[in-house]
Image 1 (tube, rainbow, N blue to C red):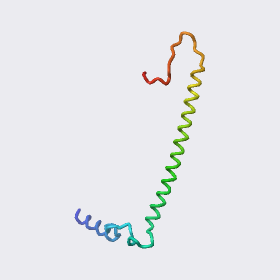
Image 2 (tube, rainbow, N blue to C red):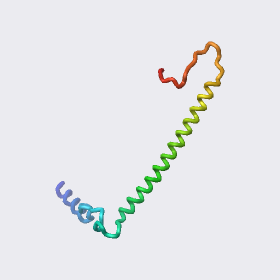
Image 3 (cartoon, helix red, strand yellow):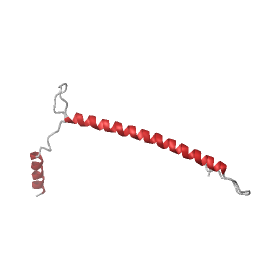
Image 4 (tube, rainbow, N blue to C red):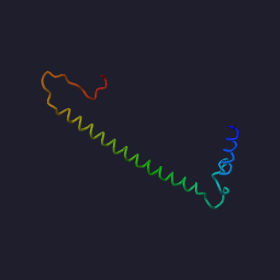
Length: 96
């Protein structure tokens, strides 16, 4: 019975041309026309380039924001009045 189901499945796939080896190039190399897959490929690359540019700008913006925040923190910590007898803690020290 399993064999019959497998044969029926194969026949259905062949009818829908899903088992046929697909070649993405419909035209011969060197022909003047380009396939639609080339246009889609170019579109994808253009979108990826735009996304890459936005990511780079975002990273640069975030780097400048982090530097600005670190400068503010550094200035703030250096201007805090110290109560006599309290231990000094360096928040930038990694040896904890």
